[in-house]
Image 1 (cartoon, rainbow, N blue to C red):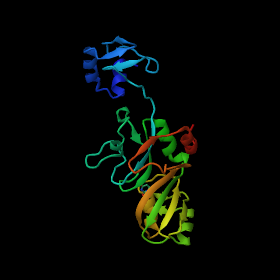
Image 2 (cartoon, helix red, strand yellow):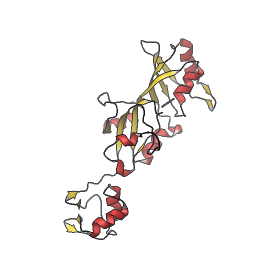
Image 3 (tube, rainbow, N blue to C red):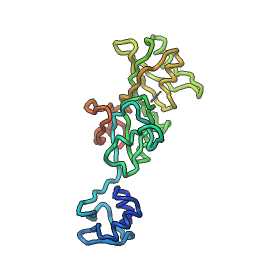
Image 4 (tube, protein in one colour):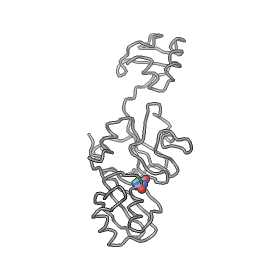
Length: 232
Ligand code: URA
């Protein structure tokens, strides 16, 4: 990789800023001042310092975020804060949310810079289940559970069978869906004459939201998390 590209990718500055830093002799490669932006480096082996500090090479990044309400699942937005604004490290390496949660939905959201990872989890043909905790206006009936099991007719077609489970309180349920259509859970509840009052994603595949993560906090995925997601 070219030295200027590496430094820009690692968040040192724009390609133009990086060229100026290089000209001023602020960068060393394996202990020698390097001024050429075109210098070919091996980012995994070479030791690159900027202003005396090691520039660590980060390739792919995978994070679990406990999304708070009020944040949009996008990288930029004119009006509202985005989930990427919550990630104080790594945002120089073009991270983005894996799928979307509505602005008023909270809970488990994965963040990455790896397009393949996103595809493996979000492609409808992969059928990765996603589980939501729902607080609804009305209580859930046995009929509702059966309707979800058959699939719900929405304006964009019949949904795949969904699992609806009631917890102790009849207005609190867990729903597991296998697609990710726009406002899907809210629309499914609307179709059974109910209304979602609060929505929280608690699980993707077998990976549960880490109970130690406060709202707005994030951590890196572990190897075990990848297993739970069914991804190697
Ligand atoms: N279904 C919804 O209606 N909203 C979400 O944020 C996620 C699933």
